[in-house]
Amino acid sequence: MSFGAKEIIVILIVGLILFGSSKIPEFARSLRKGIEEFKKTGEELSKGIETKNDEQAKK
Image (cartoon, one colour):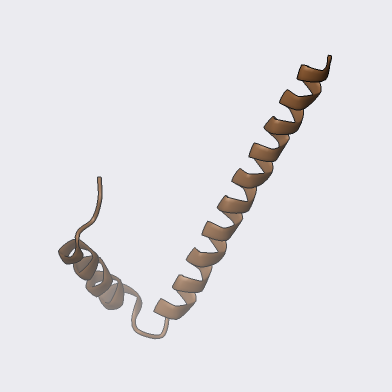
């Protein structure tokens, strides 16, 4: 499922109404931090799996 331009605009307008203009930047920063942490965790998990596979291949 992907969002088009109309859907994104509606979501932004609803967010603006619900949270107000002062809370939007704070929410965006929190969302960015969450996404970065999610990516970091995914990379660490991937590296861990690769390391484990390499160790098993050597045996």
